[in-house]
Image 1 (spheres, helix red, strand yellow):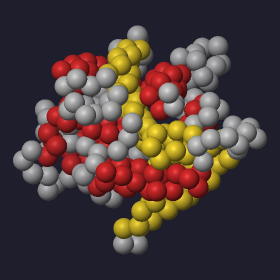
Image 2: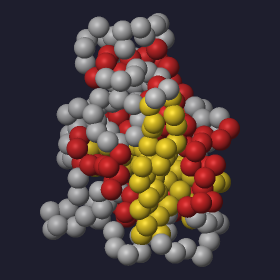
Image 3: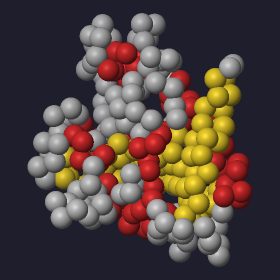
Length: 261
């Protein structure tokens, strides 16, 4: 990370009863103008993981080194709260970041969101269903579970645990990003390993087609031979923590759509 970045951790963005929800901000130490801001949403099957994943050198620190303000969010996992609470948390984080952007050298009108796996699912829905102060201008997704409609709510799997025992008819469609493609959606980067053993690459292919049919600017980035975890790991065998990673794909995409023109 180096001296050129400033880390501010444990910022409360939402209070729900006695529960304080936190996010971290990592930003350039000095920037002449307000920077674009990007929020990272961690994966973990909606039941594990934490916001610290955004501190992998090939994720938020990489964006910061290129002039972005970044944040990483804690959202409630499925052992604490069920759908749609995690999505509401991510939306609340986006609203908080927009409201406090000036305090961290960020531009409230140039905000992106990205995530891997379950984090990509929440990032996609936050971007596609946003209204008002939680709108974003670009979204980058890795290994996104885009269509949950074929899941069984009585299966006990990760999706069933996310939805909870009281999920009603239509809940799986409401929680499926593919069902929310619309012409006003922001530009989308879709990256997916072609040998993903957890979330089929077919999910992203179908999502790509649905977004394209709706007239959305969608960028397709298949990662040949990569398994599910590719977005959470460095991508090169030579020890590089930059080239060949999710950050290396997302950086030019965010620069294209969030930099001033």
